[in-house]
Amino acid sequence: MNHLGHLWTASPDRDLIVGSALGDIVKGLVPEHYAKEVWRGIQLHRAIDELVDTHTSTGAIKQHSDLQVHRRFVGIVLDVHLDHVLATHFSRFSTDTVATVVEHSLHCMHRSEFAEQLQRPIAWLSGRGDPRNFTEEQSVLHSIESLNSRLQYRGIRAPNMQEVYESLLLLDNLEQHCLQILEDCKTFADSFRTSVLQS
Image (tube, rainbow, N blue to C red):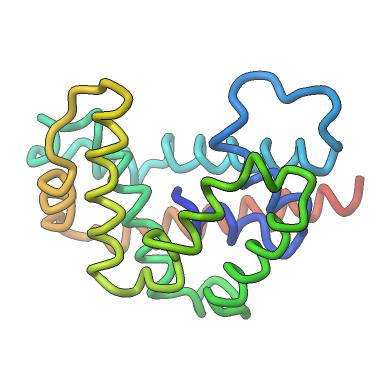
């Protein structure tokens, strides 16, 4: 799951949004001084990532013969594509719009005590990675192209991620697999938020 997916599963709760946004920044143990609600947002982010990574539909996609040679990197481009499918079918999963969720999330992050730590995702969400444009193919391709630079910066030898993405798009039933993953993420997130409100 990529940026939009994590904001959507955490919305509309401010602390869950902030914690979920921190999910790609905070690694390992969560610092003890973090508020419980923010810690739960990080927990939600990690749980959604695990759900997507271990989902039967993700497994079916990765097992496809055309993707076996790049199997290690399929999940990365799938995360981006899931945001595209979510943006395209957003009314199926939320009574809000993509714009409403993104604008509310940016507001929460800007006003958070963690705003300085969140400058990178804030800049990305406000610029080339803006999920409000993710129904457009060109915006998705910009995100895919940026993966090449990020992997190179980290010293990871990887194939051209655009070629991996093009192979992914050729799969039969790709959209059905993605919609099922998103349905299950929604069910999990709804249950998670309910448990947070009750605790």
